[in-house]
Image (cartoon, rainbow over all chains, first blue to last red; front, side):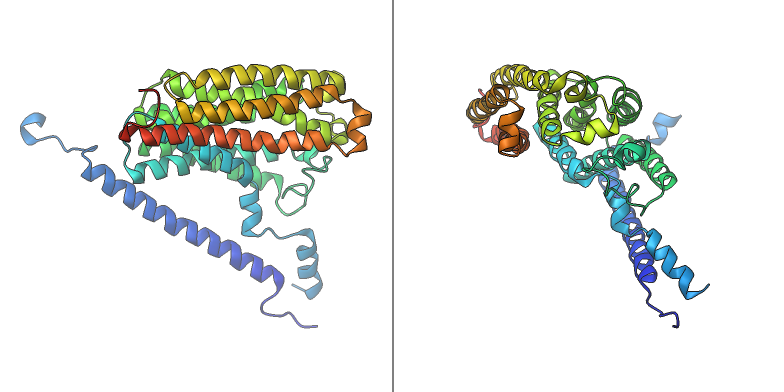
Length: 53
Length: 313
């Protein structure tokens, strides 16, 4: 009996890899979204030049 | 690699993505998400939807991480108990070390991300919640004392406080009332489960009240805690988290819950075995609805406040 290309193990690994990939993409989206919200809502205001001197 | 070796691996169980997700105890996570969301929305300050979403997400991930660490620690007794023997580790699909790694990674990740997304105090509270659940409850109390779920229940009670603090950055009485509500609800909920799961805790050697003090004492404890819970739940209706809607919900639900506890108290083992613990099972199911509706009512009061309808004001 030959090894089939899409053995059950391959399917499971594919599912795991796909899941991790989707989670990473979602995490990038969340960090990006959070950054936009934080920056636009003034949480991270860059000090003015005169304040720094 | 031969065909045979592949099949052997498959038989041993190669984990699917869902197996790792199951380590996070998704059913417990729904409770964490809902109560944290209520704490977050009941807070007297507006929160940006994105920050609110992230706060609830990271609290849920923290809760899940604690669940994975609990499964890592309790793998030996999970394999014995009927209720838990199909979990990913005793089921042979995930190794203990993997659960430990996942739990530790997600713990650190969730705490840091919550602190960055909201504030340090919220992150610290989430870290304490994970510590309490894993170290104080799972490692210490669970196998040492029949008061395990009473004290350990505090870990499950914290999410609304974390949600509130994520918005306000400070403590207040209101979220502690929500904590107290879950804290007092936990013992009757779990003791009812222990009554009809019968030999599970015996077999695993977990000193549940049913094992150490007997089933009669457990029935008495359920009644006493339900009375105390009713006083707290209805009393909370007159505070700032309550209001007319909450009060109606609390009175009706606590009347039903007390009735259930009274029935459990009046029964003996023969009665229970005759109908396969129907009353105990019904009480357990009601307890889930009880918590959901109480927090739903708190949420309704909070959401109606901007229109002058929620609360007592």
